[in-house]
Image (cartoon, rainbow, N blue to C red; front, side, top):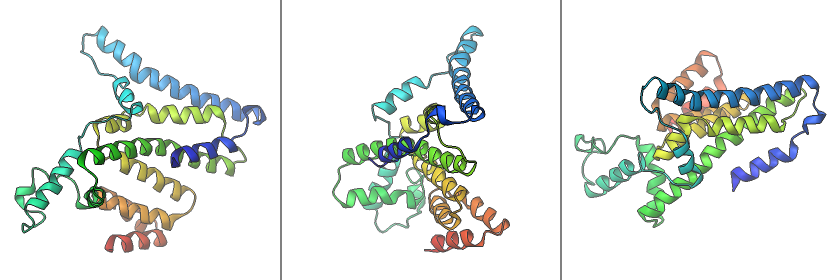
Length: 251
C-alpha cells in the first residue's frame, strides 16, 4: 500500500536518537510528552471531570478508534450521495439542481464523481462502501505520512532529521485527532479533503506552489469555502499558484 511504502521510506531515513544533538533530543521528547499529555487531558481528565460533576458522559474516542482499526464505518456521507445518484438515474430529464433533489443532494456534484466511476465499472453498492472504507482508512494514515514528510523537509533545512519520538508523536496526534477519527467512523466524506489539505500544505511548504494551487482548486470543487485559499494567493501575489488554481477551476 502507498501509505505503508511512504512510512517505510521515512523510517529508513530516520536518524537514530543518539546521533542528534542534546538540544534536539530534548525538543523531540518534549513534543512527544506534549502530545501524550494533550491526549490524556482531552480524554481521561475530561471524562473524569464530567463524571465527578454529574455532567453526563462526554463520550470517548475509543469506539471510533476500534472502528478505524477494524476498517469499518457508517454511511453518514456515502448513503445520501448514493441516493443522489439513484435519483439522478430515476429522473434523467429533471434539472440537476431541481428542488425535488434537495433531500438527497447535500454534496457538490464533483464529490459524486468517484462514486459514478465505481458504478460505471460495475461495482455493487456493498463493494463501493467497502472500497470507500478502505480508501478513507488510507487517507487517515496519509495525513500522518504527509505530516511526517513535511516535518522531515523542515527539519532538514535546520540540519536535523526525524527521530522516533517525533514519529510516534505525530502518529499519536493524528490517531488522537477526534474530528478526523470521528469523521472516519461516521463514514464522512470530509476525511478525503482533510488528506487533500495536508497534501496542499506539504506542496506549499516545499515551495511547489503551482502544484499546491492545483490541489487547492480540486479541493474548492468539493468544498467551496476553499476558494478563500485562492483569494489568499492573489492577495499575497503568488501569481503562479493562483493562475494554476483558476485554470483548473475553469476546466
